[in-house]
Structures are given as structure tokens and as C-alpha cells.
Image 1: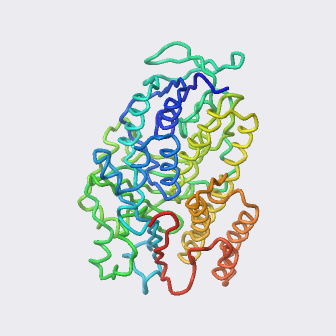
Image 2 (image 1 turned 60 degrees about the vertical axis):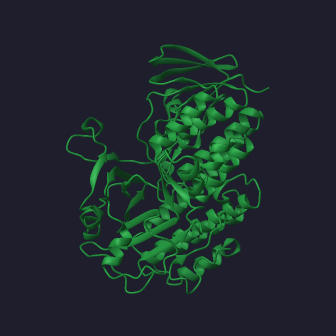
Image 3 (image 1 turned 180 degrees about the horizontal axis):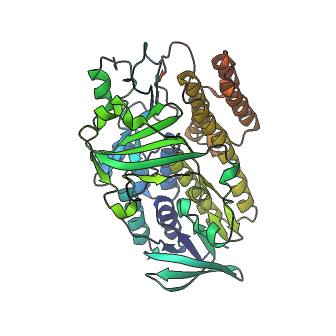
Length: 480
């Protein structure tokens, strides 16, 4: 029997979207959030996998706006008031301390991987304050009951239902058949029910600081001003999830159409990301103005950025019998490969199916799939950090990730319904990833590129690591 009442805690994009879907199917939904909209959020960069999942959700539940938001061109045409940014792919540039950016031949210290072949079919950066608010409003229009500025102070089982004790704007009890935790790193249900944080089990151990700026100068302008030929680039490197690497640290730059750029500095815990001291950063930032955070109460005294000294958070996704976590609440990994939105949308799809088509075995399977995806991503990301100061080895680590992503994209393109993202459910692929990451991390192995190419060969339909590419890839699996 379908649930008559689902309580979703957290009204970010995944919680609001799940509420919108459930309400459209006749389920009573309460959407509870300690804050109000609009509000700042990161996790801003979409991918072909994420866009395909968003489009599929729209088609499955006849929610046309989700289809419209699944490519840059249709987003701009149908929702011009919701800010986004154009994302043609991923771009990477390796810098050296105290030196201007330099490479003695194309691709020596740079890598561009296209995710689409045209602007109209491009992926997007989500300006989350507007995107999340839009999904929240659509959920309300579909019949979701909002409880904003309301916190959950206790959760308890009452027979086959859950009782939520609320405080803040609404003070009282809510009784629900199921509770879905979509609170992100806050992981409120895990905290209230005493579930431990398992982040010590992860190989990836990183920190970040971030903010939004206006007036950041384009990186391609820097390249052209310093004599670099960009004519062989498959896309403008600014229309991308742009990565600037320095040692074992890296900095993201995501450019939105409203002249705001999201910038975040990532590093292994205990290390300092010093990219802001480079001449390349100074050139891009000479006219920039920080626009968020602009309230000193949001950040510690003497700092100008929002800081997360330990990014990772990891919990069992099945907190209790009828209390389940969205993947984005169960796991916060690292932004290196822009996996957050895809994981959130996969969680929306999986949880909607579990709630609308109850199956007693589904929760255990849901947890197993998530753990396998986390294990694969953890290995891929931690390996990339380990060798980030070596451009060739870092690129090889990225190629293993792209083999995983493209395999999943091609499955989705073929109309398949893969149980796992990133091909994490295939034993042979997990073994290949483990072998490849071990080879990349062995700094004494000079043949690492050919050995990694052999390991990923059965899944390498894009010609990754082939000769003559100059680290410029125009291939895409899901978009024309």
C-alpha cells in the first residue's frame, strides 16, 4: 500500500523535487526546513548523467519543466529568469608556485573533456538559490505542505508510523508513514537517532573554502593574452567545471550567466591551497568583488570565505525502519568530479520508486547500491588527490573516472535503467578501477599510462588516453 503521508526534512533541490513528484502522484507531503528560501547553497555543477536523470524524471512523472531544465538551450528558452551557467565540459590547468601558467606543448599541463557538442545541448551550472527556490515553489503548487523556519527536535516510532516533534515557526507534532532526510551534510535524522558518522572510513579526506564573486575575468582571456593558442580547444574552457591545480590542491571556478562566479579552494586536510597567491589568480580577480558571503555573521571573525575544514560526511542511508536518507544527506564526498547533483537526482528517482511501489527488500538494496557507489568514487577521487601534483598521472586518474561516467551515460542513452551510477555494480569494472588506481599511485611505474589504458579498455568507447589527442576530448555519450 502506498504511503498516505511522507515527511521530507530539507527543502533543497532534492527534497523539494521529491515532494513535487510525490504530491503529483497523490501522496500527502510535509516539507520541513529550518531555513527559508531563497538561500545560498553549493553543489552547483551538473553533468550528462544528472541531466539525463532530470529529463527522465520529467518524462516519467509528466513534469515538463524538468525536461526543459535538462539542457542549457531549453533552460534559457523556457526559464530565463532562473539563473544558470553554461557547462560544455571539464577543464583542468596545472600551475606551479611562483610561476605564471606555462606548458611547452598543448596538453602538457592542461586537459579538456567535452560533455556536449553544442551550446544548446550543454549541461548547466545551477545557481542554487534560484533553482532550489523554484523547485520548492513548484512543490507547494502541487499540494506539498511547507513548514519553513521549522526544525526537527525529535523523531520517534509510533507503531508503523513516525512522530516528528517540531520547533521554531511551527511547534507541534507531525505523524508520517515515512521520513526522508534531505538535509545534506546536516544529516539531521542520523544525529537525532544517534547514528555515527562513518567518514573516517573514507580514503578521501579534504577541506574547502568558497565564496561567490562578481567580475571575475575569463581564463581564456588570460590564455590568449599570454600567447596560448586556444583554437584546438573543443569548447571555451570557461564554459566548464574549471579546475586550477597547484600541488595536491585545486580550485574550482563555475561561471553563471549573471556575472557571478563560484570559486572554491580544495585541499587534503591539513594542507594549504595557495592558488590565490598565483599571478594567474591575481589576473582573473583584479576586478572581482565578493558578493557572498556579504554578512560577517556567516563566517568566523577575520575570514572572508565560508570554510568546511572536513568536507566528508558518511552515514548509513537507512537510519531506521521508515526513516531513509537521500544520498546527498548520507554522503558528502568531494566536489572534484561534480557528482553531487547526479547523486541527488538518482536518490529522488530511487526513493520515489520505493515510496510509490513498496517492496520490503528495497531499503537494503538501496543502501547496498549507495555504499558501492561511494566506494568507487572514494577510490577515484582519493587517487586523483594523491597524484594531483603530477599532471600526467592526474589526467590518467581522471580518465578512469570518465570511463566510469561515460559507461553510465551510454547505458542511460540506450534506454537502460542501470542499478548503479558510474558502473559501480559491475564486479569486473570495480576490479579494473582498483587495479588502475593502484598503477597510477605507484610512482615507480613508468608504464602507468599504457597499463591504465589496458585496464579500462573494455569500457573505453571514447578513445580515452589514445595517442594524438593532446588531452583535448570532444566525445560525448549522451548529447549531440
